[in-house]
Length: 276
Image (tube, rainbow, N blue to C red; front, side, top):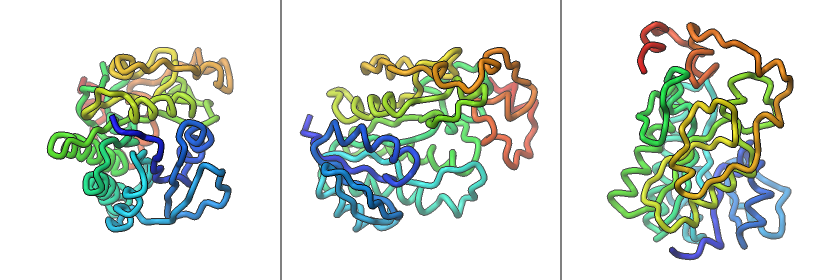
């Protein structure tokens, strides 16, 4: 495939982008950062151009300067409404894929979320073929991005790795996070696979490190060469998490999306939790 020495990182000022930047700039010669929020602490390998994902012309200009795109940008949260995510997440994702195609880019890594399957009951078999069961408007917007990735791959030959990212952060203080945690190093490994693996059309993988009793069957990531380097057990705040017994009759503890799924929930928990 074509060179990926120059990459565009959208959402570079966010939590995930901030965690990834120190790793990505050691792997690629030039990292072009973009966000609606300014970034001042640039390394020699980094450039920053402030831009709005909703501006297609701006996305095209950014894509014109790179070989590949890592699309992290968008709003993340459990309580967002449709009007909150429509611009940055839905229109933004469309614009990134569209700009990539228009500028001849072949490879995009799309940051989705495990909340795309957030209403799936714990214990369900969940892999890269699992259909979305989004647990909120944020998750619904990520499901749109996954469908857009598939569409652009099929219709225009764009090569996309979609990563359903788990929990990234240092606060492994909840039992559910033991099963969904990913380190920045392991996520960067998946991104590198997405940018360099020679045999990708549109693939879905889970962004999860080595975890006990994993929620997700990540066989597709393994097939592509992913070998987690970090363990959630090394980062848990208390050993009591290992003996915690979730109440699987409650939405927050009974589905993989946890608290994101319980915010504003007005459905029938029995029906949701029995749909395997």
